[in-house]
Image (cartoon, rainbow over all chains, first blue to last red; front, side, top):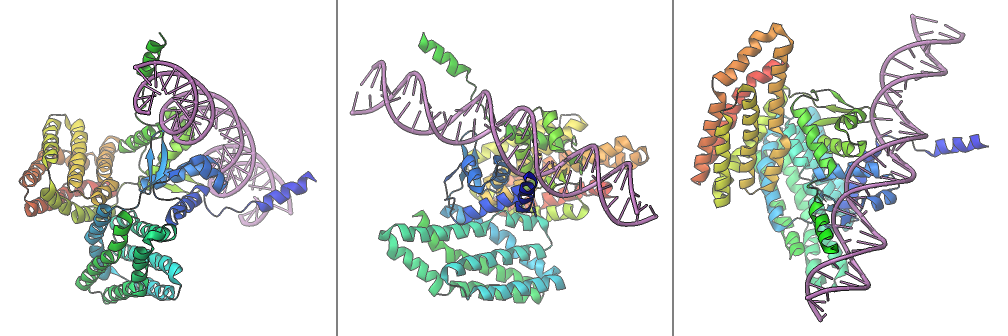
Length: 256
Length: 256
DNA sequence: AGATACTATTTCGTATAGTATTTCGAAAAG
DNA sequence: CTTTTCGAAATACTATACGAAATAGTATCT
């Protein structure tokens, strides 16, 4: 009798595919991504451990890494808090940095790309077009994720680990998505601002910013596949600048 | 009476400057820096906790952060290992990255520096000259630390957090120092290579590479203080290239 | 000899207890 | 009525012991 119980317990126990603390890391990051942990909110280790149904140990490790990523801030003896949304200055700074490294990465990618890289790039652009078929909300998330993968991919194709790491650690897409979510949440909460925020909302989607971004990705992809470094650099530069312009209103709205 | 007691208690109460896990983080980093944890060596949490006379909890947090920093690698269910010394390719890649961001940082620093920044820069150059008075071994460490502070300082004066963070996370000075230490340890261990390594050793010190580096820092400092952006960019660029040349033989020796 | 089973080691996670520090509200003082 | 002081609860941090799971090495059996 006791034996069968043990067996049940063993079957029930999921065959771990990876280390728990890594999964927890991803989960917490996702929670930040989706505002389940709001910007600036305090993060109670105890509560989080209970919620995720694990002990504190993996949560602590995950939070330590997230702090290193700049996604969570730690104040000694006071606890962890999710970082705030990007201020206008931080936003500009972030894009300035991207302008510094990404055009270079695109240039290098055009120089060094091989057949594997070409296939990956084509594949990513395929998936982007699928994303455009989604409804508004999901579309934004899908496009954001495509965007993240696209830029990361180019950084890797550039062959420079330093650049790829530096780019990934900006977590720029996470920050941008949070800004969008903040806008959306404002829309729900305060009726007074409905008009304005709705405007932003419409502006972004109905004006086809998504399509535009993908068009720019297409252009970048084309010149990289053609192995035209100079054109790749220029295309990436203008894409980031246009992306900056697309997001600026959202940032302003949130920081108003 | 009660009052005086309270006062005493308050005075006695040491407002802990940090938490244990932060100190442990620094300690482990220092151990990597000084080859107390050799490149590629396995890191046993248990043993480390015993050695540092703390429990596993803070050690785990520290290692999680160090992994995020790229100073320690983690293999699920196999444990942590210190990262290897830079390969030639990684070394070149690292300096390529520095060439990408640091000249820009110097340019911005020249544009934006204020009186506080000027004072800090002057102060740092003062301390550099003091470092030259040390004996060979200590001198290298002192110079490395000065170099780290100098470049970090300029990154911060540039006003760009993204760039400053990206630079700091390369941990380039730690990597360079480890390369040097590896050479030195080789020198002690294998007599067969003494000739060659000794040569490198002499070359670096007796040829006054330290003085040269500081001269270049001086040049950079001068043009930044003069608020001459273009000159700052150029000076930083050539400094990094000359630094690359200075270190190249060491990297080759280690990777031979 | 080669496959299998056992054992030892190590990593990873849990549970829990205890200390240190902050927070917050109420009582006391001004 | 405002400010200060005090104390209790909440929370962060550390220590410790144990157990489950995977890896690696060794022995056993066919």
